[in-house]
Image (cartoon, rainbow, N blue to C red; front, side):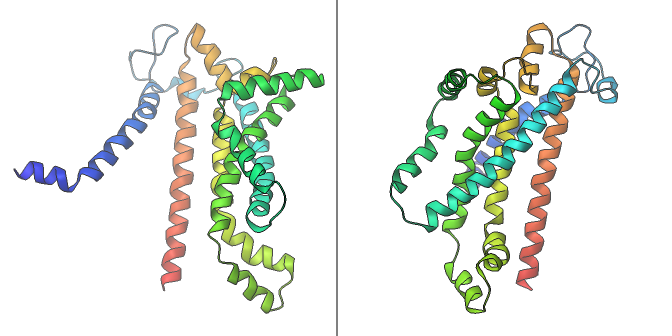
Length: 267
């Protein structure tokens, strides 16, 4: 039958589209309900279209404060994890030293370990050190678990680099710093950027590790969880929609820049 033949030919494409639709569906629901005006406290059933939440996204007490805190923590955690992760990735790929294999295994341990175990371990560490739970403990914890993802992304990029390009730069009398800034860093930049974006998303989205080590500090995921116990403000859907649109725009912009570079290189 023609229909069966068409399905067989495009089975991979159809499976990919269905998977993509399954992943995007929750975001679509969030976007739709950001324009809802519920009669009660819970924004779970469609009532009527309204732009009130978009006109006043900070209309709920402490919402924008928790969002600002999450963005600040995510920014500094991304910066710290990216700098440390990039240096670790270069060291693991380019140099041979004792315990290199053990360090490789330890780097991947946070990715394999359940979040609740890491959260409890970090909480025990901070309490034994007498540290006051708050912004700094959350920041340190986020850098700890984001580090592994940055190292993985940057390491994959560094391993694929052609060392002859750096050798050519040195043959042309470029110093170590010039070689790194003009040859090594631009080639490794996509891996570093991917690691940084992943670290930012993980830090901003984290709840379990943050909840254990935040003390009285309330981040945006913790605010959402707390609000869900009493009612879900429409403004939460507004913030979620805005973050989703920004993320998609960043990815599309990056893809557009990459395609333009490829077209220029082809010419």
